[in-house]
Every structure is written in structure tokens, then in C-alpha cells.
Length: 177
Image (cartoon, rainbow, N blue to C red):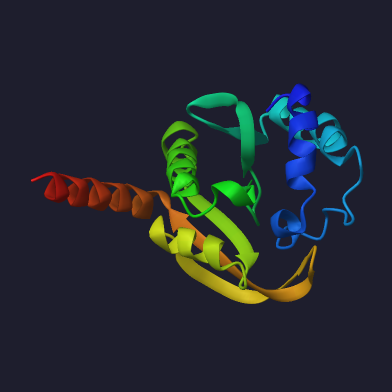
């Protein structure tokens, strides 16, 4: 993530289908210069402090084109967040991204637990949590951009992640045989 990315991200992020299930801390309607302000005042300083890691998501064959974002945060309540613009959903791209950053969280940063709260209605995100080895820790309510909704918190420990990775590798080997 770089400040220069803000101009390209702004029209993608300022879409209801992107923000509706994000935390209520996100303003709606989304401000005209909201991405630049967030990058400059929140995300980039947190990266500098070593408290957060933010990446823009880009297509492999067109690395100039931003299609989403993913973040890791040192926080007791939330460690991962992401969004993907609508045209690129349903292609398995976010599964690939989530597996890579989860591996970085546990292997690179040596963290013991990854926690990801979400709106229960965010079916794609719930499926992704299941697919990547997470388990439901709790249910409750949370304020999202779209209002106060039922929420779920999904977690995975380092040991669970390592087991999940090994199971995925075994499945891949079986498929190749």
C-alpha cells in the first residue's frame, strides 16, 4: 500500500457492496477523499509503527490494476480484514490471498492466534473462514456500515493453521496422483 494508490482505490472502495459489512468506523456516504485520508492518517502510520500490515491486491497479469486490499492488525479483537471489488469475486482470488497472509501471520510474525470478526450475513467471508481452517469462536452483534447486525468471530491458532496447511498439501498430492 502506498499513498499514490489512493486515487485508484477510491472509486472501488466507495461502493455499498464493498463497505456494507465493514465496521461502522467507516463513514457512509464515503467521503470524496476518504481513502487518501485513511492511508495518510491511519494505515501508513500504523505500518511505520509495526502495528499493522496493509497490501493492495493486484492482478498477476496487470500489476498496475488494484482490485482490493487486505490487512493484518495487532489487536486483541481483530487481526485480519479484506475487501475485493465485485468484478473479481467468486474466482478463488481471496482464498489465495487469505492463505498467504495467514501464513505470514503465523510463520513470519510468529503470532499465536488470528481473529476475524464479521457480519453473519457476509456469506462469502464466512465461507472463506471455513475454507481456510478457521472455527467459529462466538456470536454477537456489531455495528457495521449497514447498521447493527448479528456478527460472528472466527479464529484459528498457529497449531490449527499448520495442520490445515498440511491437510491441504496432502489433498493436493492426492489430486495429482
